[in-house]
Length: 152
Image (cartoon, rainbow, N blue to C red; front, side, top):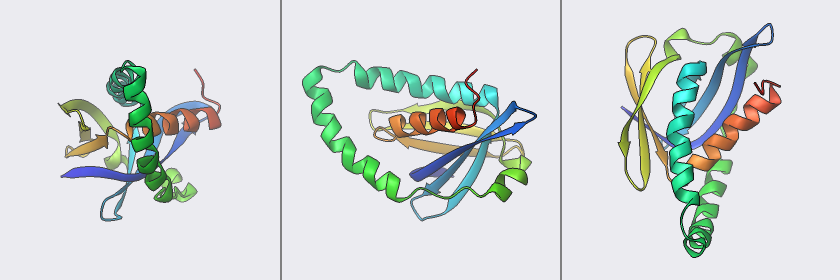
């Protein structure tokens, strides 16, 4: 089953000022919402995969970057129109089966990164991140961590 991002939201779960997990709520193409929890090691692995794509995007010639920036703007606007709400109750009553135990970059095409997530209940889920969504996802993760004052 592939989860294609239409919109996303992030939050941090912590206990006694200790980071427990990043909550990532994804609204998929059929407006289905899925809440996933990334403990620190899974979050690190996700960020490594995203970081490489950001590096490639920012190493393009300046003219190419400007051209891509215009195309990216409309995609980012659509994502912002589809941000799913994260309710406090969802974080307080987090479903342990939605915890990401591990992940691997299973497909790395020019247009889409696909991460195969292994969830706590043993199931697998493919998370597809489009080329225009990489930066939005990274910024959402950073924003959630900064808001939770968890900068370490």
